[in-house]
Length: 419
Ligand SMILES: Cc1cc2nc3c(=O)[nH]c(=O)nc-3n(C[C@H](O)[C@H](O)[C@H](O)COP(=O)(O)OP(=O)(O)OC[C@H]3O[C@@H](n4cnc5c(N)ncnc54)[C@H](O)[C@@H]3O)c2cc1C
Image (cartoon, rainbow, N blue to C red; front, side, top):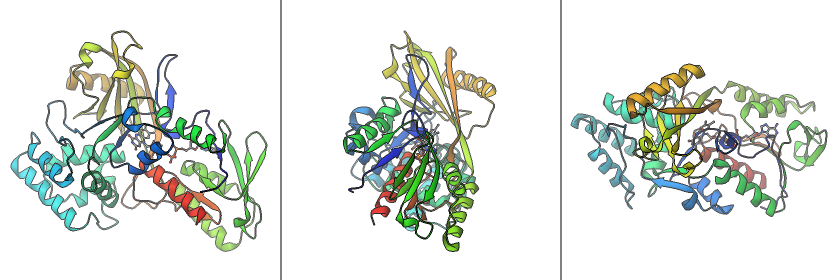
């Protein structure tokens, strides 16, 4: 767009919540196992723009939500008719009675008739009224927990229908699951930084923005001054705050400049909304498993019990630990203390997958993994003040806390500055 960009990032490595973490001297994994889906179009386009070969770095397969006993839904390979693929998947799903299948068809037809819209205050449980209990348990709940990190009764029906529409109806392969073959840092953040530098951007890692002031109280549009943690000051025309909500609120609260009453009220409201968000944790447990035992596991396996909902297999790490394969167990909404969590997970792996010899490497818990996208949530808007925008997965938008939501929000914020 012709802007001269400065990117100020507090951490040593780029990526935020979707960053790589060195687990041991020889093993780098992620802050938490992530998946993308085919419908993450903006995210995939951004990867392409910064030179990432997504087809090479992402393992792509039709979404498979079947538990280890093979019950549940598996999408067929994508055809040009997404609605037909959904019908085939429902027809072929094992473990559902005819009345359960019929209830799903009826409810899906209702969503279609209503244009995938509902009352903004409705929960997922409410938009699923009429569904058979087995479908709620084996399809809707796992979908909701994996996409939103919250249970159907706590999740916005409107945002859920948007994701269902984009994943299942809007495009060929929208529901495909894409799992990275490389640590997340190599998938987007590091190529993005190299791309920015090649465009002449000023990228500063390990540098925290400590404070923020408009250059002129009478007109924030005249520019902004950032105070950096090395004591230096940076003057810029526009600012996009791409930090988590609480950090953006901290920066706004620290502003000393007296703005006019209207603008003062505007950013005070923004701060209140940011503080009103609630957060949910995600725990990812990395473990080694004997190659022979792990060989029968697909790349992504849904689980029926708890605490984990999915286990991911990482064959590209074979050889790091001789004879062992790296597994990542993902537990959304998990609030057990770490030791109890790991014990329950070992028990689950034994009971559901027959894996009795796992060597746990580490459990990474991100306590503020995602905001709760509830039916009554009020997300802070992108516009904070003239020349000052917010972007991130929590900002007002159609998507839940996902990579796609964050990328969409960033694009909108950049476009709005140019407008
Ligand atoms: C364990 C886990 C699993 C997840 N799984 C998935 C998944 O499977 N699929 C999916 O789509 N999404 C998943 N997500 C969500 C996804 O990671 C987030 O939605 C996305 O990364 C949010 O990006 P963001 O840019 O909004 O914020 P963040 O990633 O939080 O980035 C904010 C950045 O701001 C920096 N910062 C903060 N304060 C300052 C300051 N004062 N100065 C300078 N820099 C600052 C931080 O260091 C950070 O880099 C998961 C998240 C977690 C934690």
